[in-house]
Image 1 (cartoon, helix red, strand yellow):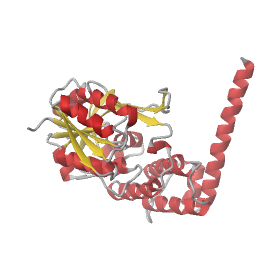
Image 2 (image 1 turned 30 degrees about the vertical axis):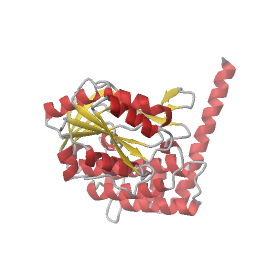
Image 3 (image 1 turned 180 degrees about the horizontal axis):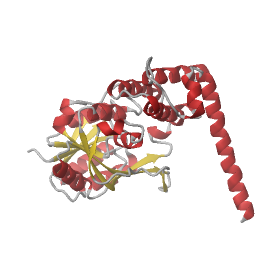
Length: 346
């Protein structure tokens, strides 16, 4: 029997977080949905937890596969879904109770086939402590429809970034998914798959519905999440996403500078600055050259972005990387000095 919304949750060795994640979906104020749990070859008992919920709640279905990663798990879940709309939840995150109700209401009120909601992103430590990731994850936009083509300007780049970064903070018409993004690219093994999916999805959407309330809590679990571990595939994923963005959303001038700066910051945060990153300076420069070349091919102007981006625009990628790393270390040292002075004065 079909339902209004299918929530797809890939599950792989979720540990003690899985029960809370499942219960947060089942606590939705809108009753007409199903939860498709895709057991991606779990070996820690997570599969048994999935079966337990399915045995006592008819809204829960379990699909199993040998471990193949989150992209394949989401694709299998979408294939098994029966809903008119699709939503996603990670196995260690939380839905707020009105997520589906308010997102679906926005879709019906605006006619949008894609709806995004507010979210929080939090670091979670082994002892259960959490702290928000800075800057705050919000979008200063009134509730209602947002024009997608308008988001391609430099002024609205941060809004475009907010909408296009993740999939779990949205509600998607299955018809729109089938017509545009189709499926998750299974080449992505350690992040970047959400951006790839969203860029292809947004290319076929004229408007996006927006609900400003923070209805999804995403956690980056210290020592566990791929977002806080070094993952070699993430470097290649950054290049693929840059190439896709340039192809679907061409830009020059200040808009090109904003996109390049954003992609470079992501590379440094997740890869270049990570203590486990094995890449040499020359290898990092080559990656940076590929990203820059994708977003600023011949004929595309890059304006603004600061002195460091000007250095990269001239092809001095090794110099750019060294100066960027030195600037980061200097800022970190300055923060330590300021904290020490604050403690001394108090």
